[in-house]
Length: 615
Image (tube, rainbow, N blue to C red; front, side, top):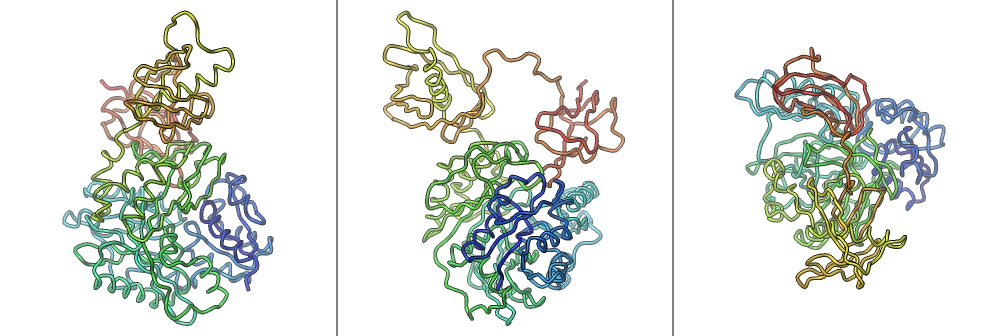
């Protein structure tokens, strides 16, 4: 029997594994980088071991340090989570060589499937070698890892070399393996996968299908189980291929076989030899705990002959600290509050007051709804996210709500090009026009306790300015004998945290939370209080390129120096933030008059990187 489990991971998945371990009476050990010293997963474990450094390559990708940590902490088993070393056969061997139990598939199975090129060869599928115009579009893809890292769609042959270079760099940073390959890019398909679970006695379960078609940058955003609208023959084909792949490598434990479904056919993509991020939707539908089953299998227990029956439908949405409007740029900062309504499963690696850093994936949480039907589950999740309190950095919450309510999704007609087609509409500003007034009235109440209030003589209205959804809004209100008033709106109640307004006979409640001097959350709307007199020195020259996110300058375009003529859209430099590379391009054709960025430089949001002066 396993008594103590070290999770060789961080954040949400480490916390999720710890939860099952606690319920099973198993002690837990966390590992943490210096950047994660105060992270939730390090706080909730029974013991924690430091991995010196912050970069993944120095910490969570150091299998030797993690094995030493397990031995030092008295763990007798290691769970890899997902990402990092979860699909590293050498790490799995080092765990078992140290006399520890590996809660995962055999190293040989990982080796066979961890490289997507070798997995395809095993199943008789050859990658593209000499790409020609007739092969386009193609997908450049990292041979190791997952999560969309090291992937690029190429539509012009002239862009292939640059895509290969960028994908190799990103894959090496995220997985420690820069191998990439090229395969046909199937457009208009759906991303469908099958959850498998296998024991050491030859039993292989297929625990239904999942649809993960809503993706940005090849990273999944919304997933559901079962995948809707699949015919019975297609479903059986998916199950058959999944079982064949698992048996072909002697698979043991939890794994996922992924496909692209187009024109009624299933095209094999890869087998992920680990637990998937989206596993909670399968757990909800089948009423199982996949982590608990992983542990039982690792302890030598046999699965029942057949899996439990499926019931209902489940939908999961990944809440990211990112800005979909600005190229999905990752965000960092203090997460002041995170709360969802009851009845929704929330898996997270953060709690109120935690900091979201710049070194790792920007996912804050996964929200999961389960209901008897798909329509009910989708409606329940959309409503819960709409009412959720997410106070802190910019997130994709509004995008998630709109995606779940989009007709193409509700009617199950989505495919992997969903965001390519609809992103502009899904991110168009639609803020509550009364939110700035509610913020101003809440602020006025807080200040009135220290000398404010109504006056006998008429006075000019109070004026407040806010930035909301990229636009400036001005609010005017007055102090009178009867309280605070605003033109056309009846103020039913106002205090520092709650404002109730009535407009056109409709009364609405506004919960107000203020953090620092300028950041205000009014229900689900985020505002920034603007100074009455803007600082004239806080201006940048036209053509200034500012860092859209905190990160590291990984490289500058070859031969780029001050005085160089650049073309609009030309890549000038690359930032690495949260394990992904982000390209900074020239905003217009002109002359590079300043170049402040150098490789290896750490930058914060708004840092001046370069200036391009138009003629």
